[in-house]
Length: 254
Image (tube, rainbow, N blue to C red):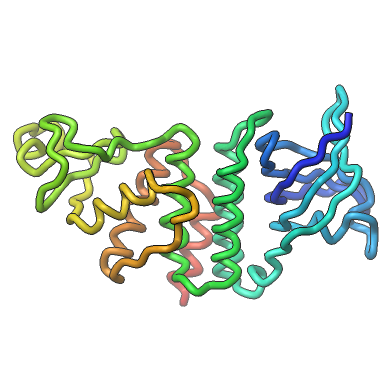
């Protein structure tokens, strides 16, 4: 059975000299593994459309043994990401997160659109990489089953105070009074959020996909935003990523 879908290549594994398995994050089937014959040949059929981080329209054949690539038409290569080792390492980290979290055989059209928007921002680099990273981490997690409850204080339902505390392990917020009243919360990793930072988290978690990357915050709030989102992702997934460590080491060396 032939299926046509749009997808982003987030991984490749070589098979012999000319073929490979492609990890595709697709609109109709989520994350799938596709056998691609001959795509590593110079000038071979489908080689351009099957490049790493390439976004294409794929026609795949589904059988009892899995998916096999029939044809592919490129839409966007995101080739310029490779011109920056920092951007490339971040793209690899995003791909690892997608591979670990995304489900198969489910529609992910809106999530794929957001991921492609993210890789577009990585390619253009008109926004800081730290900002792109923070938006991706919080938005992606919010859309794959880890939506935090940022509507109000978990205890008193206060919507906003001068300082609100966000607990990544719980995915919840507490107002300053309730946080102080519950001493057991002090033993947990908590982030103090000013009103701007709280609004930023709510915006990224709850707003329409088209509004992502269309807002700006100060450098200081951007730094805090990045600390919150990274800790939230690692706490919720209960694991680390070697590609994240590599990206952070590159940042330290610069």
